[in-house]
Image (cartoon, helix red, strand yellow):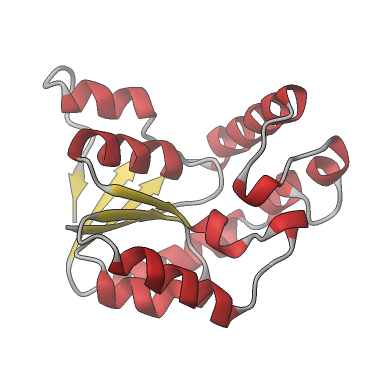
Length: 179
């Protein structure tokens, strides 16, 4: 099974993908790790595609999370299932702010040794700016992907990782909305 999880920043893509991988022993591919090299250098489209091909060829069961145009065509062709975590902007903005602040305080190393800083968080084109002002265009991109995806697809509205755990354990309401 090959699953592609999409959503805006802070929607819960990585948490949800991680839950699926943990529960099913699938490989987890965070596309941020393929796109961002050390020093926050954005890799070339060829480098990104090369890394993607290496990782996806190693395992027939994987979950990719993220939406990068460099991999859109490959993911549409390779994925068996598309899951869109559709979370309102007010929730995603709060999550990105809180998550980034925790990463800064804890000096958490992200992909390829990158770390967030107050400067990068609050700058023009920083994560908060991108979350707030890129939300609408990102949703439009995801809607286009969703409409053209030829296989099974789900939309999950406003999910928290806790909701998925409850559903996985057979307790609580079903958070899935099949379209």
